[in-house]
Length: 268
Image 1 (tube, rainbow, N blue to C red):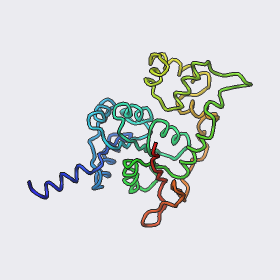
Image 2 (image 1 turned 60 degrees about the vertical axis):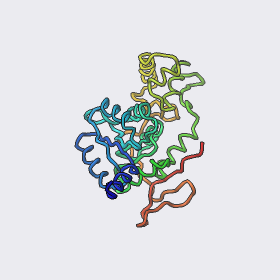
Image 3 (image 1 turned 60 degrees about the horizontal axis):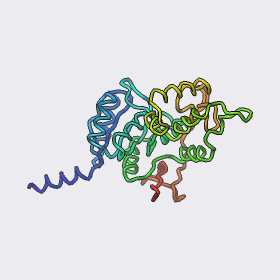
Image 4 (image 1 turned 30 degrees about the vertical axis):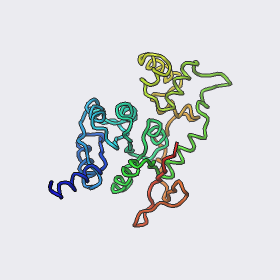
């Protein structure tokens, strides 16, 4: 065997297999081409439909999937897609692309099963570093995003589902909300509660109506003690200029630019 060919084979085996899907076919193509310049990444061709993408994830089992948090023209993207990829390929770790680092988006991304969030306002060169860290079992988030998660954990779940000591929802509806807060899909909720997926959807519609919300994200925020996501006039949360690592040391690049938090995976 040609020594150079053998070296190339080893290199391909060692590279991180990445599946990328943005909100449009054109942006997906540009994203794939840009990431392909990183010699450590092996880009998998991304289909333009959800069924094809899920089939590819199940067949190829990419190490990392980079997905847009916002469903695009073909329906590819969104938090539900993260949950579906987890079902088809549990070993695949997901990085979510966010348009803005907002509390609701960050919390829902991690609740859906993402291992990292990357805001489009960040330098693109850091996305490769993000993918590598997530592949190594770390969590990628800025200190501000980590703060959102810690706040959410500190709040008792379902704290805002009572008025004058009386529950707004029925016992079964509260069970469904608990499952939604855990990031379960409709199928997983149905299995846990021994219901059909159709019944789960009906419960969710009733919950939306009773709480005056229109999405799973808003249900979770309501349960955490918030009336819903910020209104159109609310300022977007910006990333903090200084990032803090899990060991309380500042994480910086060679140029001295602060990097988002990289939290080491726990031993559990």
